Length: 151
Picture 1 (cartoon, rainbow, N blue to C red):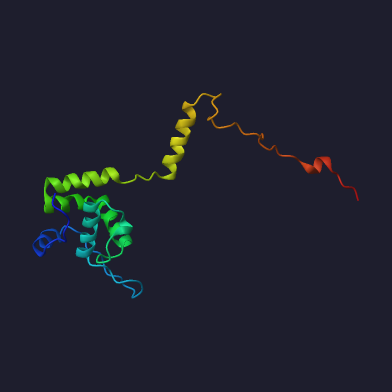
Picture 2: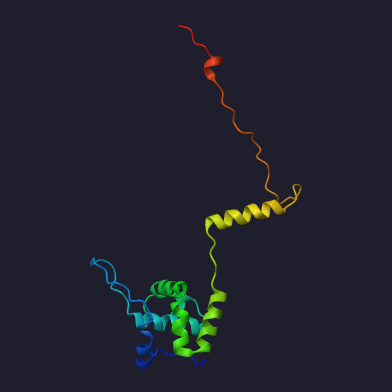
């Protein structure tokens, strides 16, 4: 692939309809929405350079904004379509490379299931097996039967 450069007007015209447009805020609080084109340029810069999001040059919107939209576009499958439109098979290959580099975050339920599965696979006498509870479950105790107060 060629070194990174911002997309041209002609390229922007080809892909602008593929990117979902964000609705403007109804409240007048917070930052104004960043331009979708400048966000796409920032995302492409990170993809081409392989640098971290926080290392993005200042000419692009904040790295948090670019990363958030990157995740949305990636999850919806829009990014791969845009890359195919702009760069063909090389763009799709770059998307696949980025996808392989992305961390996969497991949900709490997935983590708990993985821990239970790993605990089942360990032998009982293994030092890494989960320890049996040291305290037995508390039994209910009726204090009234022991302490009878007489007046």
